[in-house]
Structures are given as C-alpha cells and as structure tokens.
Image (cartoon, rainbow, N blue to C red):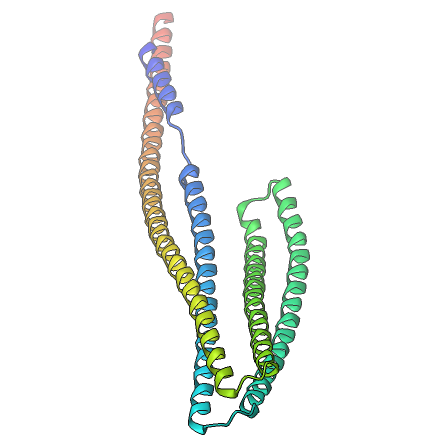
Length: 305
C-alpha cells in the first residue's frame, strides 16, 4: 500500500510540474508590431521625399520653359529685324503680365485648397479624440482583444486620412512657395525691361541683356535643384535599404513566431497525451488500492472466524 501511495504522490507531483503555456510568444509579437510600426514610418518618410523630388522636377521644368520662352523671344527679335523702337519689348512686358495674373489665380486656388485640407485635418482630429476615448475605455475595463478590432480599424482608417491630408498640405505649401517665386521672378523681369526702356536702350540691346541675365539666373537655380534632387535620391536609396532590412526582420520574426507556435502546439499535444496516461495510471492505482483494501478485509474476516 505504501508503494501505491508513493507512486500516486509521484504522479501527482510530476503532473503539477507540467505547465500549460500560451500558444503565442508575447515578446516576439511585440517585436513584430514595433518593427511594423518602424516600417510604416519609414515608408511615410520615403513618400514625402519622393514628393519633394517630384516638386523639384516640376520646378526645374518650369524654369526650363522660362528659358525656352526667353530664347524664342530673342529669335523672334532677330528674325523680325525690329528697328530701334520698343514695340517688341512692350509685347514681352504684356506677356509677362499675363503670366503673372495666371500664376496669381493659381496661387489663390491652391490657398483655398490648402485651407480646406487644414479644416479636414481639424475635423478628423476631433473624430480621432472620440475613438481614442473609446479605445481607452475598453482598455480600462480589461476588454478582450476581439473587442478592440472594430475601434482599431476605425483609428487606423482615420490616421491614414489625417496623414493623407497632411501630405496634401505639405505639397500645396511647396507648390505655392514655388509659384510665388515665379511671381517674384516675373516682377524682376518686368522691372529689368522697364528700366532699360527708360534708359533709351534699343530693342536688340534690351533683349540681349535680358536673355543673358535670365539664362545665368536660371542656370544657377537649375544647378541648385539638381543638387537637391541628387541628395534626396540618395536618401531614397538609403530608405530603400532600410525598408528591405525591416521587411527581412519582420519575415524572420514571423517565421520564428510560427515555429514557436508550432513547437508549442506539439508540446500541448504531448502534454495532453501525458494527461491521458496519468489518468489511466491513476485509474489503475485506484483499482489496486480497492483490491488491496478488499483483500485486507477478507484476511481480517478469516482471522476472526
């Protein structure tokens, strides 16, 4: 009987040492979430830099068009063999005036669009406050993960909309700044031409100096733009390397998580089989104990007879 008791105690002790673990590894899950968050931030940074490159390329094209227009004016001047009058210069002044008016209309529209995007951001932020409060309420009352699914989806959607509007505002700011620079450039061109008219220059001399002045100024601006584009392109290449590294890291951690989950699943199956075995052994022990007690009682009864 002592042997049976010792065996039962050993089995109970052994069973108590077997601990059921969670199927998920919270440390690896946390690392995956953090790496995904870092990847998203990196992709947002990459998108912003690409937009800057597009804006700079657009500005460069605009400057090249100005240079082309100036050269065409010089060609028309030489081909028409205009006399020393200023008719051609006045035409150029009117052309610049029309360009300025068109640009100013464009700026006014873009400012309205930017104002609308800013208001949308304010409204979205107010809506986000409500969802954040709901999320906090669920967290405070210890709600299960499934209860967070809907609110997390809403927060993800609204954050995407906010970021989209913020990128739009940045893009519009850059466009407005570039266009306002064009207005300043046009004013400088008009001032230059008007000054030369007042100084009694002939049309050929005015356009000759004007073309040289514009070509030099535009070449310098284009050189600066090319330098910025080159630098930003280098940044994009570095970010692409970071994105590839983060994707590899996520893949490795996900694979590790899957392996751990599979190992845990196998361990749980083994553990279940062990429990069944322990149950069977326990049943046998109980039967032995019952037979032992019955046998002992029979012996005692035989002695009394």
